[in-house]
Image 1 (cartoon, one colour):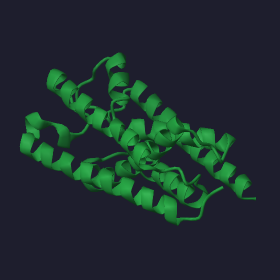
Image 2 (tube, one colour):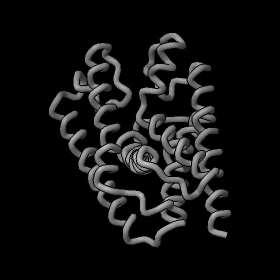
Image 3 (cartoon, helix red, strand yellow):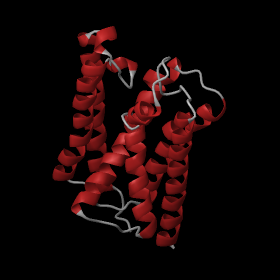
Image 4 (cartoon, one colour):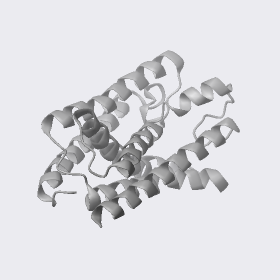
Amino acid sequence: MDATWARRWHTLTAVVVVGALLLQLVLVIAGDRALLDEEEPGLAIRLGRLVSYFTIQSNLLVAAGAITLARDPARDGASWRVLRLAGLVGITVTALVHFFLLRPLLDLHGWSFVCDKLLHMVVPALAVIGWAAFGPRPRVGGRVIVWALAWPVAWTVWTLAMGAATGWFPYPFLDFDDKGWASMLVVCGGITALFLALFGVAWALDRRLRARP
């Protein structure tokens, strides 16, 4: 019974996250500006910027994890553990940063509003609840955390380098040209601390919660 419900939950998560990502892709192709500046760059640049968002990358990781778990709720493997943990913690950070830093800046309507809520609220809730209820666990260890942390670190370095080269930043709090280096470093330091705290929580709960499946 647990395996059946786990498959159903992971399938639901996969359907929602893939649907949300496809909707965002359609909106960007159609010229929606929810994730873009006031300028109207070409399609290739819009698509390149789309995949540069931490939100999109974290949702992609959740999608990969959910799809594999829908097929095998007991999935395991060294690389898969990293993918699963990175997606889980990444999507949690996505939800928290969006709620506290980005949501007040947005004024979305229609399908843009729907897509925003799916990517930043519904998918994080499905991912976290699914992990708490169905696992699989234990799957978290020190080496897994180190490799999972490599992704957000690499994303930050790449994003700042590209911002310095092009003048475009996916999130306003990373724009050191506008906010200043001190402000940017303070925010990045806070988000890094959040990542470390969430990795620690995941590690602790992975051992305290009942093994599943």
